[in-house]
Each structure stands twice: as structure tokens, then as C-alpha cells.
Length: 279
Ligand SMILES: [Fe+2]
Ligand SMILES: [Fe+2]
Image 1 (cartoon, rainbow, N blue to C red):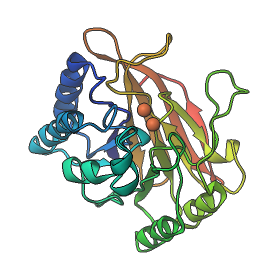
Image 2: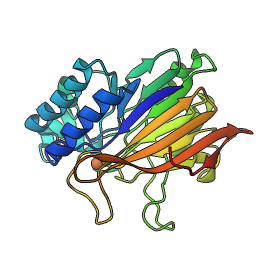
Image 3: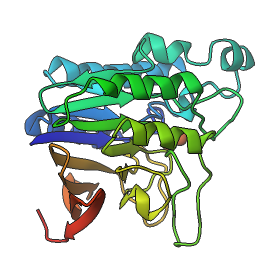
Image 4: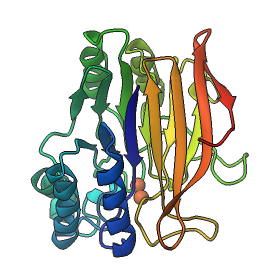
């Protein structure tokens, strides 16, 4: 069994410092094997915002926690045209991680991050063919028993948000991306961007998705919230490739409290929701 904290959309520059402090303390005490941050480290890719995000990551790492992150659309400068098109992720690479395809592997886990943020599409994400090759190649040598996780900022296909009928935009080249994910035998897809926590088997939403469980995170620390939303993150226990326990933690003013909980088992080539009992 391994434990992963999945944070997203921390948006330094529009963050709540009290939430950041509480989150850090929580993570340092609970000590997941890996902290995943699925993009939007900053609000506007400004240097001062990157410094704050960098300090947050460095404090986690200094406490001995492993951190894996990918950039989001907010991490590409919006108004600085030179930076946006010529050096879109220069600051991300300087302050957060020079590696845009980060990889984490342990006895129980194999986790790959892919950058879906692009200069030309202000909000929408995209995956290129080289990244699809990377997905196939990185997971090829991973032993069967490890939990394989792919992290992106943008979800790989249209997701229901709000009312069930409303769907988000799909990532560019999503059909090819899903084939790569299925070929690579990815068990869990972690993403953010829509500031909504969410979990469902990929096959319930799209065909040819392979055996992936889709887990979306809300915003962990941003103060830009919808009326019914609080800051939250996902606390994931994964056992090999056949059991996932997902506990949502939401901000309640003075600290994070346990919210929705779901258990999934892998059976017959698909993830099934096993129970709704609290953890
Ligand atoms: Fe965001
Ligand atoms: Fe985003």
C-alpha cells in the first residue's frame, strides 16, 4: 500500500497563507510517499509568485517529502508576449523543476508527469506525439505490481463539471493520448485545472480509455473559489493495481477535515466503486 497526496492549482499570488501553512503541517505530519502537484503553481507566472511556490516546494522537500509537479496554463506568462512565446516555461524550469516530464519510481509506484500547458492556447491543454512516446516508453519496463500513475494539469478528455450535462473541453489530440495511456497500462490519471474534485472510471466516460481511474483535484490553496467550493486535496491509498481508496480533505476555516470518501476495486478490466463508507 502506498499513499499519495494529490494537490492542484495552488495559485501562489492568489493563495491563502493560513491554508498553505496548515497544508504544509498536515503533509509533514501525515508523510505521504509522494506529494503530486498537478499544475497552476502560480496565478500569473510572475517572478514573486514563483518564488513563493518554490519556497513551498522546498519546505516540503526539506522535511524529507518527495514532490512531483507539472506546469499548468497559469504558469505560462499571459501578458508578457516575449516570455509567453519564446520562453513560456523558463520561470517554471528555474523555480519549480527543470524537468518537464518528471518521473518518480519506488517499490510500489511509478509516476510520470507530462506538461500539457501551451503558449498558443490560453486555457486549453495539449499533448504532443513525443510525449505520447514518452508515456509508452517510461512505463514499458515497470513491473506489473506497481501502481502506474500519469499526472497532467489538463484532464485528458472532456469531464462533467457542475450539472451532469455540462462538459469541459478536451485536451488537444486526446484520442491518441488515450491510446498511449491504455498501451502503457496506466492505472490512475491525476489532473486538476477545473478546480473540482472528482473520481470516476475512465471507461464510464469515454471508450478506449484503458483501465484508468480518473481522479481530479480541486484547488488546494487558492482564494478564487466558486460559491459552493472550499480548498481541498486528495489523499490516495493505492494497493498495487487493484485497489484505490480516495479521501477528500476540505478546508473548514481552522484546518482540513475529511470529506467525501470512495473506494475502488479493479475487476474484469475496469474500476468499480466499492463503498461509500467513511475512512
Ligand atoms: Fe487553476
Ligand atoms: Fe489551469
